[in-house]
Length: 120
Image (cartoon, rainbow, N blue to C red; front, top):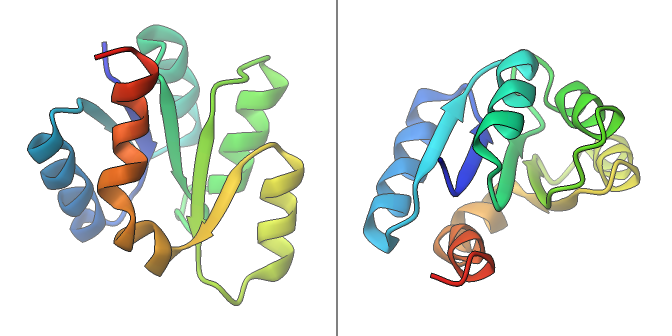
């Protein structure tokens, strides 16, 4: 079981998230497609879902599919700060939305939420 399931297809960013998670003792399962995100979120029952809204496979579509399937787990989504319309769409889908730079800056704290919510 993973504490966090993350839809991120940028290899550099995947490595950054995995390295940070390892340092703070949080397990992360990386996926790269909306289908894989839906499947992993059902199988692993993560405390937190992280989505790169700029994922080539369609980050916002993945979030909308999660919600349509009844998954109400917390989702933190990140994107370029200039993508206002995409940010609004993600907020409407129930995501906490932040810029990529803020996500990077607060990464340990964001991932740490999964650990806290599971009482570890």
